[in-house]
Amino acid sequence: MQRLLYRDVMLENFAVMASLGCWCGAEDEGAPS
Image 1 (spheres, rainbow, N blue to C red):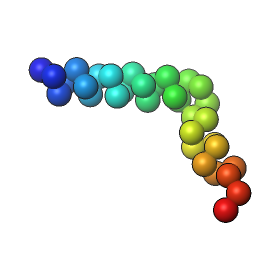
Image 2 (cartoon, rainbow, N blue to C red; image 1 turned 180 degrees about the vertical axis):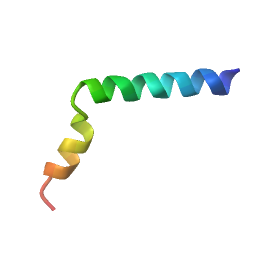
Image 3 (cartoon, rainbow, N blue to C red; image 1 turned 180 degrees about the horizontal axis):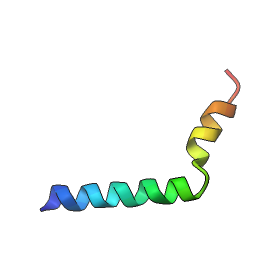
């Protein structure tokens, strides 16, 4: 039960990130190396 709840939370967070334009991935790619 708790594992399913955790999965739902992760999926929801992922959906929010995607709706924000995946700023995490864009920031990582744009970061100077």
